[in-house]
Length: 530
Image (cartoon, rainbow, N blue to C red; front, side, top):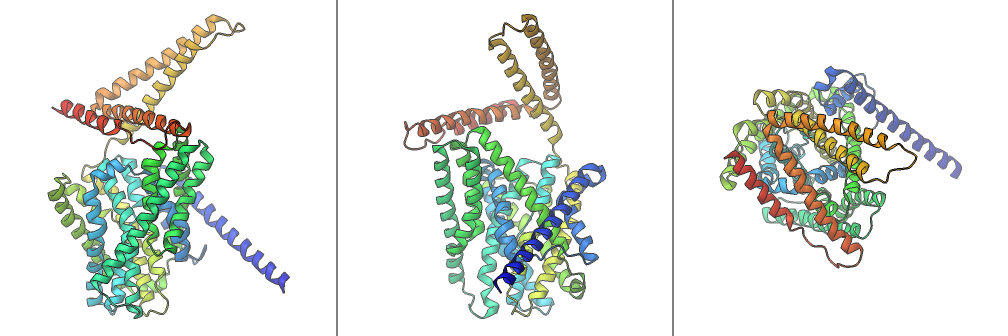
């Protein structure tokens, strides 16, 4: 019996590995094809994966069973951490009012805006409709944010879209958990109780996230070992999620908090520039890897037969999602402008409205609805229908909105300018090396001079290119000032970290240059505009 059990377990493991390899092979094949053929580059990579998954589902090829635990516990933490790690707190802070309004008040409006019409015009009860609204309140703009960056959309627009999604997911998940007990009959809706439970969920998540984030930040100051520091970020993402969930908090909020702290504080005081680059590249790969699997499986899990039976529900859900998103973005957006004196205009609001896609989190929540509820399949079908609409219709047309509304930026020029600046720095360092290095007696001195002439020639070409770019695009000068500011702040933070590692300082000092340099740059930019 023991031998048969072991054999059966081995067979299951082998089958799971084979399924995983098939999924990975298909995902990477889509990535490769999208890079080889120029026509496919017009379609965001994540949307291509959904389309391929739909094709597989249409011919009834199922790659793997997609469970909510798989998304929430394995796929969600790295996606959230990577987004939080890369978002700049300084940029997020400037847009904190609209992000907060969209992520908190916006979720409430979205839930009610979907639930009330659905319960009114379909056969779903209000408690079930509220679960549907909570499932659809979570936005997933991965492909839209990637498109923003590729086309060079404004940093503020990208920050708001990404920041809203980070906190929106956490609030939507908490709202879902609060509402799921009502149709089961184990809880009654009460505003004071709901507010208290919401505060508990968020408080535990944010509190533990702060403890873990700052703890790892100060720990990494004590040593310089890139592989260990990289591993610590991975453990913090998964460990925070599991620990917070175990203690009754919101794992999503916990992971977002840890990612923000490590990306904006820990990486500055505890990691040297090379380590930060290694960790950032690791998380970029992991996010690509996880997104490749998640979006392929979203398309692969579609049940066309079941969807066709609930087309009326899906149509109402799509209309309410798009309509409530319009109310949230334009209503709360103009309120944010009034409260903070922001300058978001109707064109930016239009892109934020149309770019509010739904994805993996919504599907995970829908699949986690208890099987004993009568409306579970209707919720799943409605969510899948809305996700397909937002990904394939809104996702594929967002680029058109950006171009028609004249929100496409100068990303190609900025990238070319950054590359030219990097080449100039590298060539100057080569020249310094040739000037300072002790000349070997085995090498003819004329050879050293010849090498210097070659490098100087290349340097002149690079500087001519930089001058040309600056003349054609004066706004690119801000990149140089921003890079200098970051280098100066990094030098200051690295110095404090060295003192702590050497035992000459027992606590970290906050960089004093950051606010001073920010004010100086703002002053220079204001004078240039005047």
